[in-house]
Image (cartoon, rainbow, N blue to C red; front, side):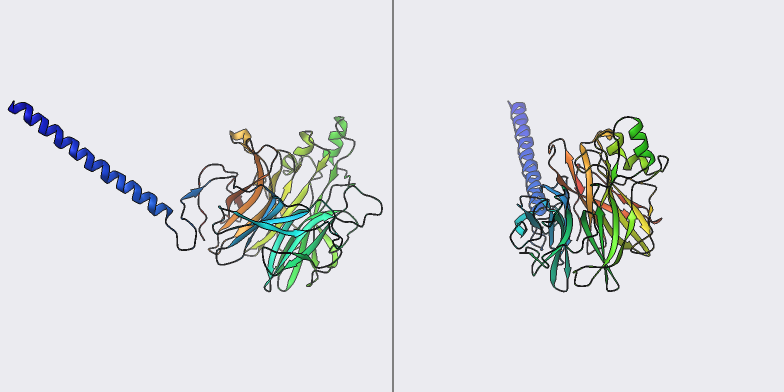
Length: 390
């Protein structure tokens, strides 16, 4: 009887201790959860990580760092009709739809359809949106009559109103994908000459014709030109900055020609350019291949002046599909760069996943420039990544 009592008391003590331990562990877990969800003092719940894609269905995404930890994203689509919408965020990861900020295809607008690739710049307290669209003035009824225009607003959430009843300028061929760079009081506009009616002779074109695939290969090229300070036009003649390789033994030819070699389409693209300066070197990033295909990819080139000449990098492409490596991302391209106040850089771009199908979704991955000047994009990722630090 005494032995049974001792055993019972021992069991009770062990059970009691277990209850205390569980309660303590539970309290710690709850405290950890509470600490993880506490406000970080900037109006956003603190998070340890995020994963791609972000919850935004944009093509050609562009993020404006408006200062004070506020960001605005613009892009192609995203719920906008005949124009562009914007989303806002305090942490680059969680985005809130604001509204449609620009609407074209109106009686007063020069633009009729195909509204693409907006970029917004804050200059002198105002916000300037550069964008591509189909020009109404089309006497020969061209299928692609794309031009670049500019609209202005007092707020990043619009409304943006066109500054002029016409495109910025007409180079004599269709153009898309505006990017603007400012230095020493001068502004430079970078754009892509569309592939439309631009057949180019090259070894790749000859090879594709011998295969019986395509009679000709059209190409898009990236140009740069100085902008007037009021954005009403350009100064001087456009300068050719980037184009696809002429020779098949060029180290860039394989990845920049996949639209042709994979028999997607008879075109080679060089588009979606974005330029920035690091130390004394200018970096210009660009996208190649069919924008609606899985081989859309990003490379870069470097130069010593805003208008080049530029030399393509040996580590291209720096961003491409990863399904051949067991991943689920294709069609990575038309990127832009977010410069954080702490000096870090992030690459924002669109891509497709198995879940998104043909819908383009937004990715955000860290990018950096190594000590030897090599540019690296740490993506595409779909696994947990550390949250961007302001």
